[in-house]
Length: 186
Image 1: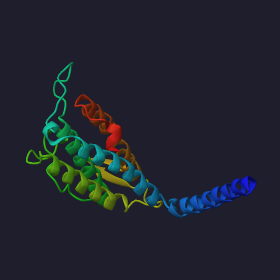
Image 2 (image 1 turned 135 degrees about the vertical axis):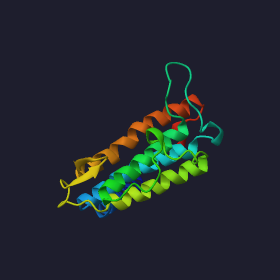
Image 3 (image 1 turned 180 degrees about the horizontal axis):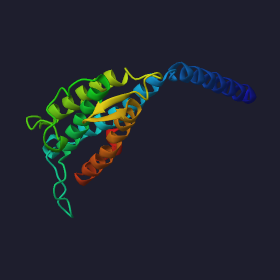
């Protein structure tokens, strides 16, 4: 009887493993565009979870214990990610940037509350997904205009994927400085 249970567990484990591999293959990206779409989704989820984790009252938080002159507030970090998403998306779409980039790419001053910043971020990632969806194997090296400089589309996508992770690290520190556990935000 015990041997039968062990055998059943092994069979169930094997079936579950085969199913998991099959599901992973179905979700596995098949094109460059799909790889880029998935790669943008990672920082999107991470940044939005941190934006939602910070209490509203701390959105204006700026570190003061040390050399922190001129650093962005938590809200400005989120808005900066959004602005850069819009700037990179506009370059890929060959459009004018559709928002006010603000001073130092901090976005519009009118956007300041938690709800406003979170929505600005969400909208920026939606726009960026739309733009990344236009990049494919044939046009990867095609130059687009970014801030007056011709840059390959691949470089824009690379920056769109990597830059939010830089800001993510700063946002995590701000959360910790305010007693918020970033692990619980995930």
